[in-house]
Image 1 (cartoon, chains in turn red, orange):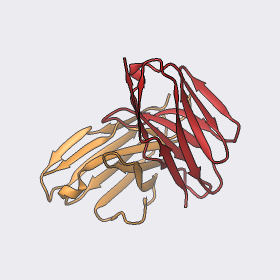
Image 2 (cartoon, helix red, strand yellow):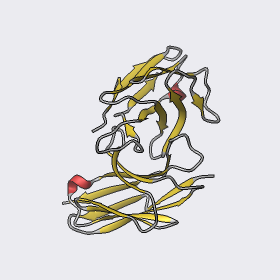
Image 3 (cartoon, chains in turn red, blue):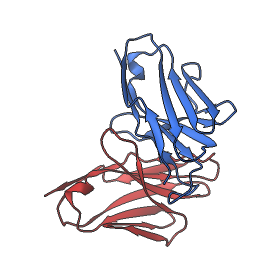
Image 4 (tube, chains in turn purple, yellow):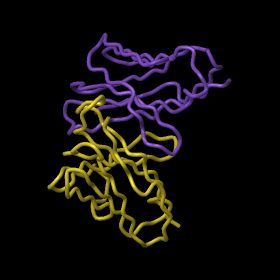
Length: 111
Length: 119
């Protein structure tokens, strides 16, 4: 069964304090690992897709990396506007295109 | 980029009534749409996969007679919660594939979600 586990559940940072979010996954035939950002009461907003181990992608203060068992979302010098819940999801080989989501990491960045 | 519009963003209804939620792909044709449900502090749970012109595929444990899905065109899918009860109160989010642009065809684009409260 495809499964995604995210840690920590919640993370509080001071502005400028870099950290990483973890996403561990088990999936049959990975067809993509996705990172989304979700603000309260809103739908998820796409950040990155990673397809193979060793792949990395960057966007502003965010950098996503992928291994065969997990993905990390590194946040460098975060700002208060980076506060949100970050969701990790995978698409397995047997899916019709849908994603299996983790529970997310709620990030709070204090000024 | 790909945009998915969902309406209404929130709705309050009485127990026993039916509620319809619309999901539209605004700038691309969505051959497949997905409906998710999200409880507080929980992950998004797939309810059903909706393919244009055919019957929806429901996940195990989702009542197809309660959650009616129609995908009549390449840009519109609807979810109707029939005879709603308080336990149906949740955040419903639709998503679509088939968009191009910066997101790419492999990326799910999500609507803003619909908060349903059943009194």
